Length: 232
Ligand SMILES: [Zn+2]
Image (spheres, rainbow, N blue to C red):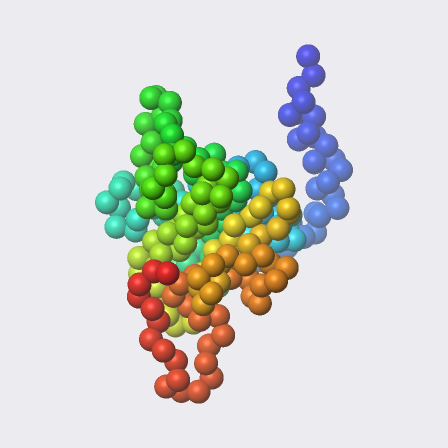
């Protein structure tokens, strides 16, 4: 029986890799210097490299069910996503953090239903999106979409509880980007804190920002408002 996965590995090594050999060698010699931490849902239809036109070495990628950010303080246990955030900010010194949810998200839908009894970790994990849930018994497509978007904003707010994130955001060294990717349209909607809504990238003025950072810093000294400390 042919081993399809093995075939794919060989094809990569023999055909795809040679085209990028020098690039990978450079990334080995110089190390990785990605400037963006991308926290995305694990959904197979969300392909960060395609969306952003990036390649090897450009995205520090964390994916999990729902694109959730666990609390910094460890009160909900210790999670790989939290470790990755700390590493990306403190060691890699990324200048952007993207949180990317998407349409038809099974993780968000599960917040309105039940998960299999054996899925103990999943049930706990989904709680990181609980506050985004709207008070309806049977969510329709619009409610689900709003919940997906609210969940993104919730994660941005939780990111600001990470001291190293807050410090850099307030210093203007790090920007937060909330995205909602609509699979069937191939379009990312970016969270615009000043409008308080998600805006299609085709109409947006910038790639989105979290609730705590003005994307265009005022130039005049003293003109800057204190960063908001409450969520949008
Ligand atoms: Zn999802």
